[in-house]
Length: 281
Ligand code: PLP
Image 1 (tube, rainbow, N blue to C red):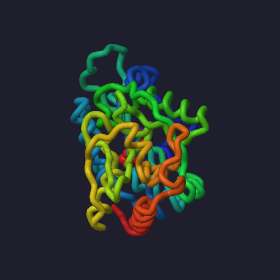
Image 2 (spheres, rainbow, N blue to C red):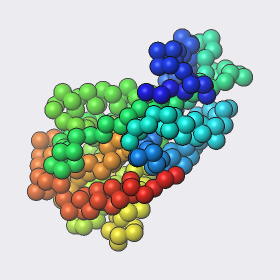
Image 3 (tube, protein in one colour):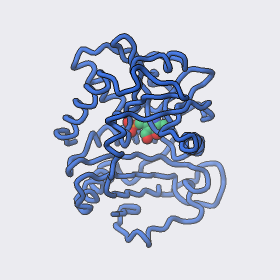
Image 4 (cartoon, helix red, strand yellow):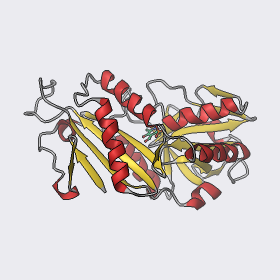
């Protein structure tokens, strides 16, 4: 595991954050998870653009410079030397005496952690996974990738205790997204996923899937659907940087479609895997 803290390479054990860091006190920070396959970054540009968008939303000045961050991500992956690497970036509003209002002239705290990506078990992609639905108890700005993930953690824990892989958030029956993934359904050969508004994180993988759909003449609609439509779908799958394209074969105990990964999900997985072998940016 390679760690860079505020631009400096540090030993894992010596990577220490001040006790009054606002990330620790308030969850006042943003993060990204980026993958590199065989040393090739997979749409790092989009992840860094999202980080910049999030920073604007929360009035966070990325004072270290995004180019500097990119350089260090590349360095960390090179130094890691693993085939597949997962890079975690976190930026907080820095450390200052505890008070809610933003401190002035305090530098950001920023870390880059690169480690081997072990990925999910292959069988998950082959046979599909199960999900539960849970009420979405998060705030109203889910489009910002903040480190305030307690509601997501609770949801994920509920899924685990139910023997499921993922928890799918709904508000009043309207399906939003997973605890750490976006949700797609297929009905009558068409893809549906929640519009990229304040109720979901606009996933990079979600966007890539829509681009694959475009390129292969698969119709899609970014429109809301409810739990009944989810359970009644021909196919369901999740998307995410770590999740990739994950077939869902059971939700709340109800079997989806034929109970095996569907044809369109399979096709998207194949196209996605091709991109993993070529994309480098
Ligand atoms: N939605 C949530 C709540 C997430 O935490 C994530 C990823 O961690 C995603 C969606 C998927 O986003 P991406 O495809 O950019 O990894």
